[in-house]
Length: 193
Image 1 (cartoon, rainbow, N blue to C red):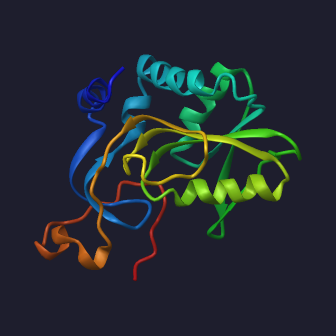
Image 2 (image 1 turned 90 degrees about the vertical axis):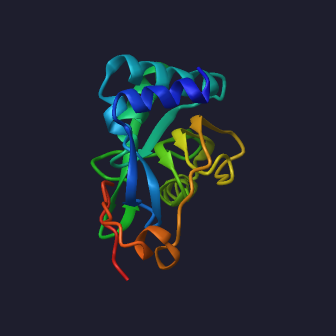
């Protein structure tokens, strides 16, 4: 499936939004990918995750981990298709942690799966947890890479949809300067400056 075909799926499900958005990273953009709207459809979820699973099929993955909340659905389905344990990391007191009885053992080969990568901040935090456990990062997979491959988090990195979507530092945002109201549809509360 090409980028254009995948983009058509996002548009047809209302998962590609246009306007003025505060991203989870804190940056601003005129484009927002609401992956949950496309992943709620089993046929799209299965197809998207099969692309990720096939890319990493021969990477010796033992565990898939995703940052909460956005990556959980796609990580769980990709892990199911790979036939491996799937867990997630979540924020507690602002720090990414592994909780709920989940664990990563030394020597495990771990795949990080996220829904959307803009700056890669959440994924980098999960990678730090993997390294702290003495496990090996096997790769990073995502549904959307908004950086068009500029954000490199792992040697083996794959995204189903890759686009160069503009984002702005809040202080330099032309949408703010134009007085366009902002929305923050992401799952994480952003601390205001």
